Length: 410
Image 1: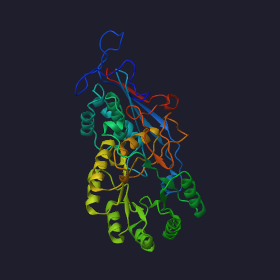
Image 2: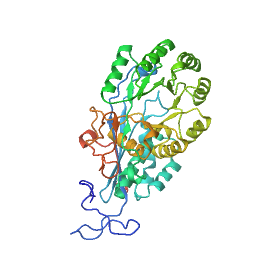
Image 3: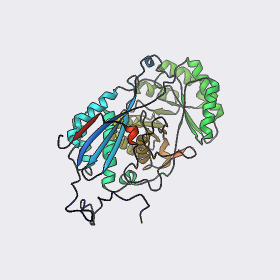
Image 4: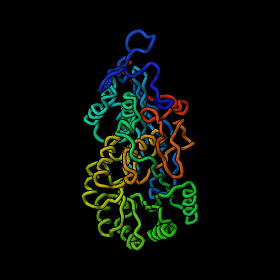
């Protein structure tokens, strides 16, 4: 017996068939078959996001305060299924893309999505890739919605469509912003009280001496089971990186993407021999392979829109398993839709390959009414997660659509 709440919509069910799906059948009391399994509507919504502008190494660029939003994609079929996806594009001082490009990219490829069978998701995504180079932000939102819809069409949670759960609970990471010594220690204490044991400490907005002092202070507070890494957000010149990392080499800290380019990060990793996490430098599967083969990446951050979309991220997680490289799976920002997506993906991996996830759920933007809940510094899907992503959308938070396209052109 399936757990309560796992049923398909009343007017839609599987017909008995051996070895596959026979298509929708008529519900009792209805004349004729259900409508065909086709995507007949694509809708976009722009939901404003309240992302704090904390002190970062981008302080000069932050004089331009971009109004961030998450672009939500809704795909509907004629037989009553709905798929959801989202992307919150990073500010252009952080990533080489504008949020307007996500909307434009999705509208550009919409004719390749409408009137298609959502169960043929790989073919649809292949057509999108052939028609739209780059635009990882557009692909992230659209591919998430397509996979959510495909899993619902097959009557499965997305994690099961992708092969099933391996990990059960996954570690969350706590972000420690650039701030005073006292505030850093207070932030660590707050995260620890919530059960967190993995911490990303931001650096790069002050002189190298201040970063050296911050690293030493944090490393002295660590418990044996805790993991910490230090993130200058590409803010160090190679000279800064060598100066800082040479001064704290005895502590063997992990540093995250300290320099602007992959080549500079590779040079510093080789010269210092310290543990390295690469983030923005990983811009796709090929770069992941290069970094793994170069031996300069102990941990990888896989940002969906930064690596080319959800499909590219899925390819990278397979490579991570092959090379034995733990990964953070995330995107720049988002809501409960993104959290559900990265959790479904991460739970297809062994726990030791998931270095940490970020909890995107904020009370300021309660877009998902049933978000995944942290538990003692971990996250995981419920035993009965529902079909697809399993998210329920609050229509009042979603607001009015910016664009609606239909397969019949209306």
